[in-house]
Amino acid sequence: MNTSELPLDKWLVVKYGASQISTLISTHASREAAEAERDKLNTDLTAPCYGACLLVEPLAQGLNHARRSRRQVYR
Image (cartoon, rainbow, N blue to C red; front, side):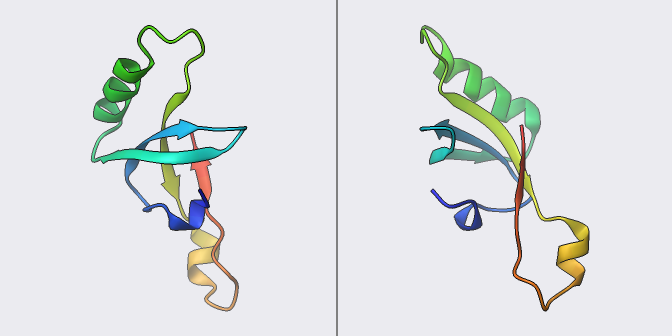
């Protein structure tokens, strides 16, 4: 999944594939809710594959409309 397809400024629960986000599971208003769902999904897995992250747009790029928007993922 391309990060440009994901919503900004929301906490996301995602499933990771080969070193990248492969599936959006859900969105949340708070970090606590996203982490609680992530922990529930990762219970009993030998290798946790679900993560909680916040996707934000860098301020400088938001102000410069001439450039294409690149997004960053914070875990």
